[in-house]
Image 1 (cartoon, each protein chain N blue to C red):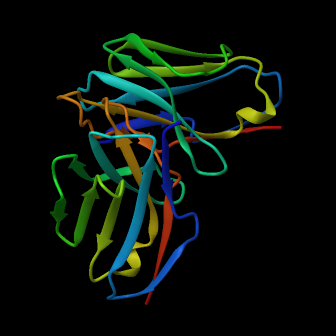
Image 2 (cartoon, helix red, strand yellow; image 1 turned 45 degrees about the vertical axis):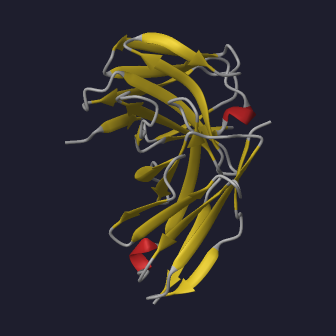
Length: 114
Length: 110
């Protein structure tokens, strides 16, 4: 009964490659997110989707492209990977009831770019 | 710019004691603060929410305070146990997406 799942758990790849990370939630939530956690442990919002529509796109290189085929899925595609993209990427979801929405996080995908 | 600051140094305490973690915010008036627990290799897990008009919230052994004058939240774990060892993240928000601090590592020694 996994709530928010991500695949793969680990991703090791060469600079310049293109890769995708998949995320699925079975909580029935309307909103999904991608966060990046760097080596200093800061968790930064990258994208937010509500009912398959992009509502927030923080300052993220356009090499990163989210895709939401339905409200239970939010995938992240990264083109031309760079060394600085190495980090842990977390998918999350929330059910917006007002302003105080707790975030439900997936287990994370550790991306290492060599 | 808005900042959420937590102690970067790990907090080491003995089992049974009360752990107190601090979250300070600057250039900001958040409508709420959230606290999450993150274990190594896992995603953060929501623990508690406190709104700007609340001074204190409790849940089992956990207590959170929100002082809008000091611009600070304190997170307490009473009767701490080694299983409480983890990184604790503070998150503040005015809209529905919170801004996270970098977390404080708590180590409870048996």
